[in-house]
Image (cartoon, rainbow, N blue to C red; front, top):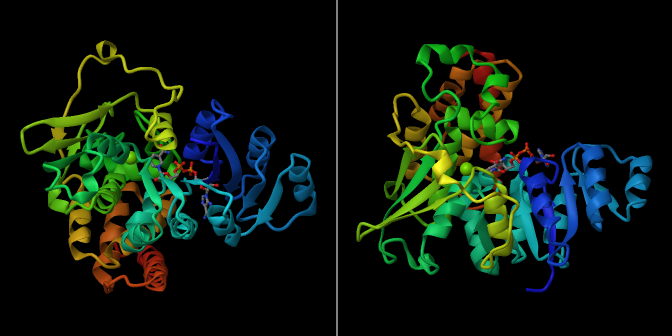
Length: 393
Ligand code: NAD
Ligand code: MG
């Protein structure tokens, strides 16, 4: 393949930094076209010094001449504001877009990349959750390529036959087994959950990640979002997906076939593996991750997921069955609830209750345009703040 020109949306985050680590190993294969951040201008500047992109974007910083000059000194043109994200994702010079912004903020630039037929490395699961139909339609229409970076979905992708797009049943698939570590509080007593602090929730036993996804992993909302993500990516019905607790995060997910075969992808829990896989696909490159030493791991454990303990999983199955804006609402309520937990406005065990209360109070509409999605997102956010303020849970 000729040199790929890459935009990294959310380059200062956990996935963004891991992506740059892999890219740094192959200057002849990958050229960084643009890097973007919400507000961390110093880290963004450091990254520009090393990778010399044509553009950098700061979303939440006011236009600032001194900053512009400091980036210019590194041969990078600095842009400001949210619209610039779409420009650098859709520009004709770009081949590949790493979608690594957290939350619904990643939706518009990812959609822009999809409508321009880019190769999209998708970490931002929320864009599929809030607007799966629109994103998948845009990918199909413009013949974009969507490669999953989320470790479970990347594992499922690797365990499926190449032509699985013809349908799971046609491919002999009986079910997809989505593994979940269970997070840091898998074996805590339910009455202990109320006192969990943001610091404890952000400390995942196996993965080092951004704050939002760390809290999502602790509540298992991350798995709920991933269930929805998997339905869209693999054109699966919820009944074709089973969630299985696997605390070591060594098996990243599996596919069970009709003949009794189960194919799994294993590896050390390090996002550089799925990132390198998606970057080089269908080739294989070194990622910097050591080969898995199973003798050292010793044993792998599994347990069925307890839906009473993790009601968000049941909620996700229901939301997929309902369709329309249900998953948009679930995502919006979760984003606000997680932020409120991180700001110590609600307790850890209230996150799920808040989301359920919001879902119960809102009308679900069918998704036929981005406006419908954005309106549902906005309404759900307002309602979630109200539910939290009134302490309705
Ligand atoms: P993070 O919080 O570490 O980084 C988020 C990035 O997005 C940062 O660069 C930040 O500047 C940018 N950003 C945040 N809010 C923004 C906004 N409103 N507008 C524009 N940019 C904004 O998050 P992360 O852990 O790297 O996760 C990124 C995405 O990847 C999430 O969707 C997450 O679910 C997914 N993901 C992460 C991991 C992981 O191991 N970290 C694994 C699988 C999937
Ligand atoms: Mg994951």
